[in-house]
Image 1 (cartoon, rainbow, N blue to C red):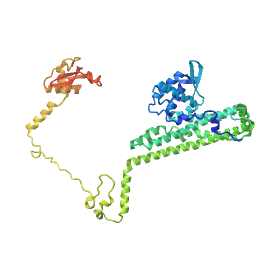
Image 2: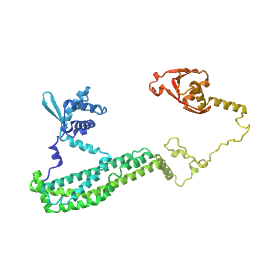
Image 3: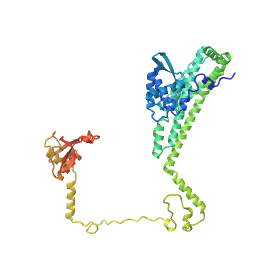
Image 4: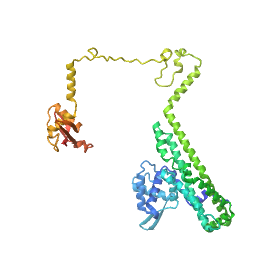
Amino acid sequence: MPSETLSTRLSRSVSADFFRPLARPSAPVYVDCADRLIDEAGEAGRLSQRETIEIIKEVIARHPLSLLAEDEGAALRDARQRAGQFFNRLIAAGWLEDQTLGLHERWAVITPGLRPLLRMLRDLAEDRVAELKTFADTLRGLCQTLEERGVLDPQIQPPDQLRSTITDLTQRLERAIEQLHAVEKIVTGFEQRQRQTATAADTLNLLYEEFGQGQHMVCYDALRRGGLLTRIENARSAVSECHDDPLMRERLASGLREHYGYDDADAYDHAVAMLTRLERDLGGLKRRAEAIDLRMAAFNRLSQQRYRYQTELRGRRPEIVKAYCDAINAAHAGGRFSEFAGQSADFAPRCVETRFFFGTESLYKPRRTKSVDLRFGETGASKQSEDDVLAAWKERQRLALTPQRAARLVAKLLPSKGRTTSTEDITLETTDDLLDLLAAVAYEHAPALAGKRVRWSVDGLRRRNGLEPHVLEHDEIAGHRIERFAITREG
């Protein structure tokens, strides 16, 4: 009798509407609602209807761009009513179960099928390196179990113990294989990102920084460390011997028959299938790790090609120009450049501001250098007398903001250390005095002045209220309006 198909067994566990929320435009809302409700329900597996409605309302508020359908409360303006309508959709899909225990006591129960579904979605979204490093530990523990003396000896172990051991080994090995497949998913994600990098720097950063950190986490090298690959091969040989042992098959079939209630033929077929699958999965670990190595090598080649494309080819424009030149060479093979002078309109390119040079105009022309007269004397464009140069130099010195002029003003306003003054109390009349004040703001100390070093600090309201300009006070200094600040002498 042929075994039932997966779809037939699945139809007995969940309804036809169970997977429909994942195909709707509002699927992100359904997924986040399920994730939040399972976390909040905890081990009890249920929440009050009021708490469930509040959680659904919060999740919907976090997805303002999601398109809700009419049956999901899109036409309702009240957020609580919209959450209630969405709650009804969760019940109709079989993700929640409405349980009424009294007139005012209603509960939302997490259905048994929702947890495996969400576990699968979480595994699909898994991209953390730390979660994928444990596959070697899983395989190491599996080999340690198979290396124990008499662990699969049908003459020593009872039938139910053999069934339990084989089932545990199969589940642990399946988890390790899933982690290896997850590595392939990570490499595929890196490939997609590498094809979309904008610059050569982004390409190198993705290759050496992000991908380089996780490249060693799983693959063939991890299986070789500590002789793990050899231990896996020895474990596969031990399982192969058990697979060919008639007594092992009979004892395992007996354990399956006692535990699951199979008949003799089904129990024997399941026992053979379990041993065959365990042997096959152990033998395929090496090939799977080698396949991951090939994917990583392909990613490295893609990164090199992408970097060369971005640094040497620089996009499609060189290719377009090259194709255009090849077309010209093919159309005018054997001709002369002098013959093209009157034919420029025949092959006018479709580019902006394109110009062709013919004859001597196409030859290289050296750049013209501009001569500069570096001789000293009265000749040239700058004829100035020594008095004019000295006067201009003095004027620049007078307007320069130097620490010395700042120190003179601070010493004049604050004769002793520790004293403080502000622009509210300072009276300055001339432009030179204003420049002294600006120099005090620009510097915090000055070299020795009359044998003594002067130090000070400046503090203003803008440092604390920079985002509130309306609270800043201003003072009139030498005919100019400036923001109020204080000067404190520190030495």
